[in-house]
Every structure is written in structure tokens, then in C-alpha cells.
Amino acid sequence: MRDSYLVFGQPLIEQAEIDEVVGSMQAAWLGTGPKAAEFERRVAAYKGVPHAVGLNSCTAGLHLACVVLGLEPGDEIITTPMTFCASINAIIHAGATPVLADVDPVTMNIDPEAVRRAITPRTKAILPVHFAGRSCAMDELMAIAKQHDLKVIEDCAHAIETEYHGQKAGTIGDLGVLSFYSTKNIVTGEGGMVLTRDAELAQRTKMMGLHGMSSDAWKRFSDDGYRHYDVEEIGFKYNMMDLQAAIGMHQIDRVEAYWQRRQVIWNRYLEAFANMPLQTPATWPDNERHALHLFTLLVNEADAGISRDNMLIALHKQNIGTGVHYRAIPDLKVYRERCGWRSEDYPNAKMIGDRTLSLPLSPKLTDQDVEDVIAAVANAVDC
Ligand SMILES: *Cc1c(COP(=O)(O)O)cnc(C)c1O
Image 1: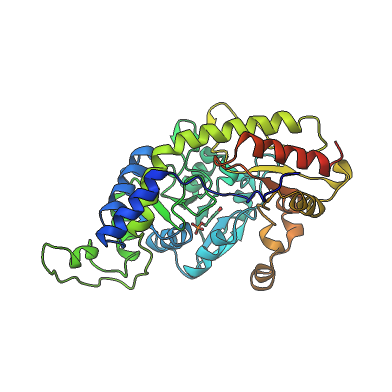
Image 2 (image 1 turned 120 degrees about the vertical axis):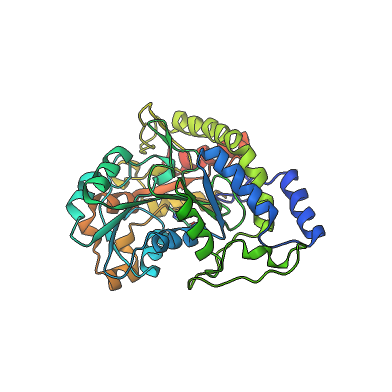
């Protein structure tokens, strides 16, 4: 057994980020400034989208997306029960009502047919999540949106590298939102970004993310002299710091190299688990690109001889950190109580939520770390 604990989702931080952060500290410019702008430019170039607005989290970005698209109390937004709580909370914070549509059991993404069934006269938007980095069925979802005049907000927290039929995830709907949280494919510690093709939405996202102040208010303390600003709307405080962008602007330059490293790990896992009584992630069509964010095993106790929860414990005891992405949203207390959801009504999300377990997949893993994970899993299922 390995002697040190393998922490789940540890990012790879390299010297360029460390030097850049130190540079920001030495220049004593910590808040939003030129590095945030540079990081936005690099991400926009990578995604091939004209506008990117850096924020302090993806959660903030999802909230702002609802706000700038004009979603308000009484409006319903259809989303997935197989996501992080932030996707749901952002909708509720905007005053709108989340409505769940079950996932496809194979892709684990929101099922367009379930979306159709969930539409009411109050439906105003769809918030699909590209789960684990696999693209949602965007042709079908965009067709539904067009037919019913709905906005589309893509939760791309797992999906910076994801592509669908030649289009990049986050650039297909009205707005796409990235996360740079510490466990995501590229990191800034905490951080997020809103992507859009629409200049006006970008400008409004920026303004509403900085108190509702007139544009570029952060420049008011710069060396071109004091400038008055105006406050145009009641906004939020969601801007990205240069300290965060200092990390991100180098991470984005390595996004493809990290993806390639995760692909090697992914393929090694597939090979190693092929003969074990565990379900590995489904394959995807050639005209999609998977971001390879989460390698999820489905542990069915009847086959594996061990429950998912006991497998979490067995791996932990062997010094392997894992994750659960996710328990089905309706199984979480506040949503049961406040939204009245019951997981029986979303059987595919429930099945996944009860069986899923995510293995370490960071580019920081060494080949030996990967072999340690495989050996620990084999041991847990007696293979
Ligand atoms: C991580 C995550 C978020 C929230 O991202 P933050 O940057 O931590 O706010 C939202 N949605 C999904 C699917 C996530 O995995």
C-alpha cells in the first residue's frame, strides 16, 4: 500500500504561475487589473469566442447569467439532477425556479425528451451541464430552445476542452460558464468566467459583476487620474482578482497538455478495469470531444460484491482519495424540503448518484500514483 495519501483533484501548479503571483504581490496590484484582462483574452482565444468575463467563481457566473438574461421570479429554468448544488442555487438566487429533467443513464447528461416533458408556459431557460466533460445533446437542446423561445446557459465547469459537432462547449448557448476551482481542469484557486458571442451580454455581465458600476470602474484608482463612475444597477461583487488571473493565464497555456496527460490516465484506467465487475464511463461519438474531467466508476453492489459507500472507505483506507459526483440533487435535504423533489421521480440520476465514484485524474498524478489507484480498486473488488 502507498505510504502517502493521494488527495483527490490536486491541481498541477508550475513555476510560471508561482512567479506570476509573486510579480503581482511585488507590484502590489492584487485586484482586478491587467492580468485579469490578459487571462480573459487567452481563454476567449482558446474557446474561439469574442467575449470572456473573469469572475470569482463559476457559481457567481451562473447567477449573473440568470440575471443578465433577465430571468426573474416566476420564471422556470430546466436543469439536471446530476450536478453540483451550485447549478441549482444560482437559479434560486436569481429568484427563478429550478425544474429538474432526468438524465440519460448512459451519457449522464440531461435528456432532451425529459426537457420537453418539463416545459410549461413559465419555462424561460435551460441550464445544461456537460457532465464529467461529456457534451450534452446540444443540437436537440438548441432545437427545443428555439421552438419554445428559451435562453440556454451552459454550465461548463467540467467542460473547458469539450467540443460538440465542431463547436466548443460554452459558445453554443447564449452564455457559457467555466470554473477554475482547485479541482477543475485548469485552476485559479477560486475563479470562473462567462463566455458569450454577444457584446451587450458581456458588457452587462461585467457591469453586474462589479456592483453595477459603469464600465471599467476598476480603473478609477489607476495612474491616469481619478475618474467619477456611476452606478447604473444594483449589482454584485463577483470580479476576478489579478492574483487569481496570474495563475490562470499560465494554466490556460497548458490546457491541452494537461488534457493529453489525463487521456493517458483515462486509457490506462479503461484497460485496467475492463475485466473488473465495475462500469466504466461510456464511449462518446467521434464528432464530440470529451474534456475528461471526471473518471467515474459505477459500483453496483450485486456485481462488485461491495457497495459504493464501502468502496469509498476501502479506497480511503488504502490512502486513495476519491470523490462522489454527485448524489442526485433530490436526495439532498434542502431541495427535498424546499422544492419538494423526490429522487424516485428522477430514477436515472438516482441510480448514478447511488453508485458513482470518481477516481483521481489530475495531470499531477505520476504513473505510480495511477498504478496505486488501480491496485487499490482491484483490492476493493477482490480482483
Ligand atoms: C464546480 C462546479 C460548479 C461551481 O464552480 P465554482 O467555481 O466552485 O463556483 C458549478 N457547476 C458544476 C457542475 C461544478 O462542477
